Image 1 (cartoon, one colour):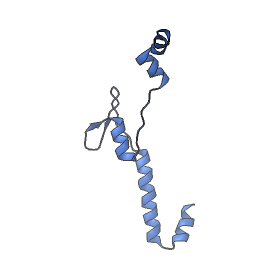
Image 2 (cartoon, one colour):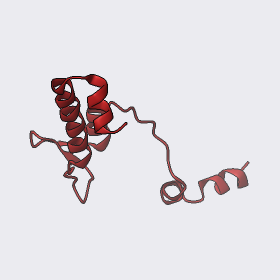
Image 3 (cartoon, rainbow, N blue to C red):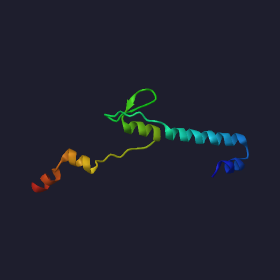
Image 4 (tube, rainbow, N blue to C red):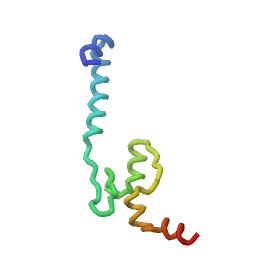
Length: 89
């Protein structure tokens, strides 16, 4: 829906202005730069505190994380553990 159609549908300039302000706020949120530590990947919030990524995202996006291990990290962390286990059975 384009801006003119919304203005025509709402019928009042005040409602249109509120809609426009809401849209602008959403765009500003999407464009926000997020300061992240290059080493540990913690994110600095507006108060200057450093938070782990999961906490920051859960607070700002209302998302919940599910943890797993990608194949590359599994190999780095556990090596050939699966081979050792199957060979010793």
